[in-house]
Image (cartoon, rainbow, N blue to C red; front, top):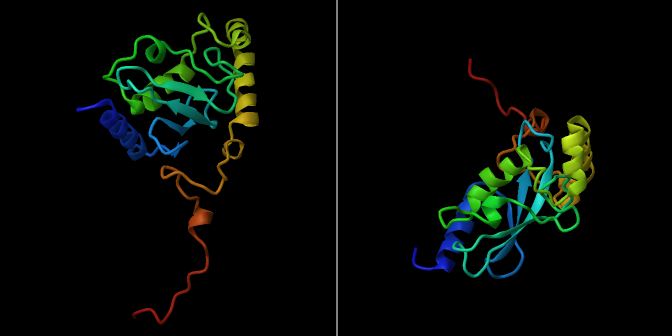
Length: 183
């Protein structure tokens, strides 16, 4: 790649082509929001978060800044600021990684396998270690309260390309057969 700005452009386009809803914050390509869905087989399933991404001038040599905009209950996410404590983003970032890695691997792994021994949310970490079922119930309550599409400014009618229409939505009932059937 000839320059960090070209790499930034390429990574952003790759993210958009991967069916993520991306909303630019300003005219540049350095700040944007991405809709992120909680992974299946986790207490976060069914939740949707608006994640703010800031790319430094030195990206991809320097890691992006990642933060949840709407609240999430997680040991490694600061409840007030939404900042994320994730080694691969904060300490071990490599230019081999890209934005798709962040949303398809790193954040799902963070939600599937929280690390309560390195918390940003001490209460969530303590509850997770002390009483896992109550912790998971609290996660689900936060998802219900703060992580619905309407909570992040997306109307429920807006469908992402990977969501299928229900049979009721598909069959509008206003089609009529015109003419006679062939014998």
